[in-house]
Length: 210
Image 1: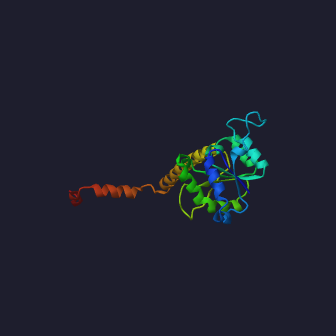
Image 2: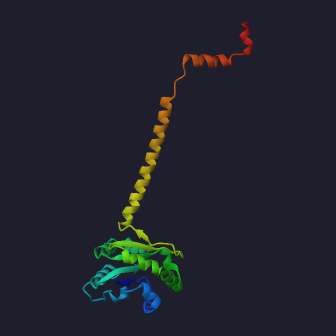
Image 3: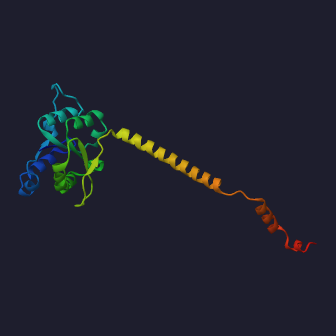
């Protein structure tokens, strides 16, 4: 299974994990896994599919070469329709880091991925093509990769806002209906009730008939 580290992951980090791939402890869980760099598939100026600042060409090249998994430090790929669609159309499994991972130092970045590697590999064995996952920035052996939606994030945000507005309207409507029912079921005061209230307000000294 070919795994490509994208251009947002330091090339030195790719070399580190390639070196680890030769270790017995690493091989026990990483059998048949091949670690590569997206740079090996990135078109150069003059190539027919060269598009500056566009990840779609290397994604297509990588998939055509038998690539199956992309590990990315670039969460913007989900926000760029042409790149997100390229990942899906090529049937890739994509694993993203959290945004704050990009602000970490080199050794901390390597340490997090190494910590998560057994969890990551186990998930890759069962993950379906065209799925997105996230490595959490936590050091918890019981943690799991979080599956992400492959839908357009902008549309998801719009739907979320619409659902929040709809829920608010429904809450207000339900409260108005509840109050309306209370007023409707409350019995109106009878003549007897009014006379009793009036009687209670009379001065006790008036009861002698004077």
